[in-house]
Every structure is written in C-alpha cells, then in structure tokens.
Image (cartoon, rainbow, N blue to C red; front, side, top):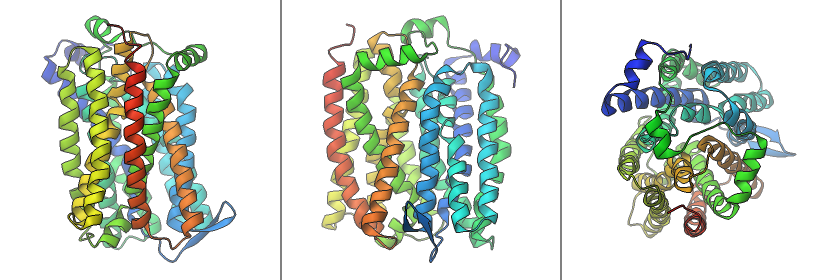
Length: 429
C-alpha cells in the first residue's frame, strides 16, 4: 500500500485523459461501492415483530438499528472533520482498511447478540464508516477532472445501496438467518474492496496544471477551518441546510425502501432495489459529469447550483404526481430519487471543489464535505427519532415519506437560491 512513486503511478501521470479518468473512476467507484456492503446490507432484513428499548421508548427494532447506526455514522463525520482534513495521503490506505474491518467485526457481534445488543453493535458499525467517503474523495479533489471523477464516485452510492440490499435479500431467500445476513454480505465485498484500495493508492498527485486551474489543496488546521467558515458563513450555512434536508430524505428512502415499496404495491422481487437505482445513477451521473467541460469556475459553480435546484423541484413535483394518481409507486421511487440525487450529488462532491476554485482560496473540499455530512446525518437522526416518537413502532412509512418529500423540496430550493446569491458576491471575476 505504499504511496511512493512506482511504474504504474508514473504511467497514470502521463496517461491520456480518458485512460487516467477510467482508472481513477474505477478505483474510487469500487472502493466506495464495496463500503455499502458493510453499511446497508442489514436494511434488507425486516426484523418484524421485534422491538428494542431506545431513548426511553420502545422502538421497532429496524428503526432502532437504523438510528443507532446513524448516530455512529454522524459521530464519525464530526471526527472526520479533523481527521480527514488533516490526513496525509500516505495514511489513507491503512485508515480505509481499518475502518472496514472494525465495521465488519461489529456486524459479527450483531449476528450473535440479543436485540438490545444488536442496537449497540450497529452503532459501532456506523462509527468508522462515516470517514470513508472523505478518504476516497481526497484522492480525487483538486483536479481539472474532479467533476468527472466525482460523478463516477457518486454513481457508487446511488447503485451500491440497492445492490447491497439485493445481495442481503438473496442471502435471506437462500435460507441464511437474518441476523447472519449483514456480516455475510460484508464478507462478499471484502476481497474486492482491498484490491480497489490498492488501485486508489497508485493515483498520482494533482499536476501543476491542476493546481493552477483548481487552486492548491492543502491540509487545514483548526485555525484555517474556522477562518474559512467565518469568511463564507452565509453561503455555507444555506448550503448546509439544503444538504441536511437532502441527506435526511435520501437516508430515509434508502433505509426504508423495502417498506415504502411494499406500501405502494411496487415490491416485486429482490432485484427491485437495483432496478429503481440504476436509471437514477446513470441519469444523474451523466448530467453532473458534463460539468467538467465548463472551464470557467464561476459559471461551473452557478451550473452546480442550477442542477441542485432543478433536482429539488423535481422531487416535489414527482410527489405531487404520485399523490394525484398520475404516477405509480415504482415510478415515484425512481422520479423522486432522481430529483433528490440530482440535488444531492453536486453537494456531495463537486459543489465544494468548484466553490474553492471559484473563490480562489487555499482549502480542501473534504473539510466542507465532512462538515456538511456531519450536520446532515445529525438531522437524519433527529427526524428518525421524531418519527418513532410521534408515529410509534407501527407508524406507516409511506405517509411520513410523502411529507418529507415536500419539506425537502421546498426548504432545499429556497436554500440553494440563497447559497448562490451569497457566494456570487465573493467570487473572483
């Protein structure tokens, strides 16, 4: 896992754009895709008729598991604000592998513990995984091709969650007990993950041309992070609020896709999880990837906002069509997911990379991404607890999901507009 220059790294540094891009996307995509085998496989289980004591109340076991994992995941994002923004390239490989192995050990504990113990195990499963995205994206940021590479990386989490749940569902259908399904799903992904991490480590650093086009990306200490937030607070705050809403929507849809599809009558087979996500992945990634063609950073940053705004409006519009009966359950899951991811994906990778380039300030996009993720998943935990307290363990997921769709669309659209209005006054012409 050495990061010292070698023959492959040198060849990648001198490779044609298409060859370098294909290699980098494959390595990053595969690494993060495999992470979902350790994070989302458990969601393919229903854990019906089981409850667990949580926060002084009785929660449905699956909701308690989701919330517990989210608490660990959100805490990991807060830890990652410091760890990821300061981590040198030489340590990323061991950190990535260590995170995955800890998560897999937690799934092993999940298999053998009683319901209350499973809830604790899911906390320790989520705790290391929240830092994986930042570690992977650190290999890609600060390049002239970052939009293209980031879009390829984002394709991973759109497809991977559905695929991980499909694998988990197939394991259950093959006769594997539900408690052992998550750890087995993780083992299926582990060998490929290790190969992908090795591939990532062979990537060369950004070239001098990359640094001139996209600004030097340097580790940020505590003083640099606070100075950056104070300087650009209004725009950052608006973007963080929009991203928090999108994260809540995306994670709720992800964790309870089984229940939502069943309640809409669209749950046909284990493959439905993948079928809903594939058109979203290819459609969204194709649109976002085209932004790398825009060389002017101000224009590129504006178009990134525009993509997010269109996505937020599409989310609300598709929900209106579903409520009116003009769109079926499967179509709604695809259209609302497409809108949500069209808004979510830019924030998750290229938004902050292009922002730093447009503002002309020395910083790292990973710091902004980790901070946004930390806030987003904290909001997700709050909404999950609120839903369980108000609706109880037997509350319908479909009704809550519909209301969540409208709220995300309205709040997200307003905040995206405010974000652009704030940043546009600070961009260097």
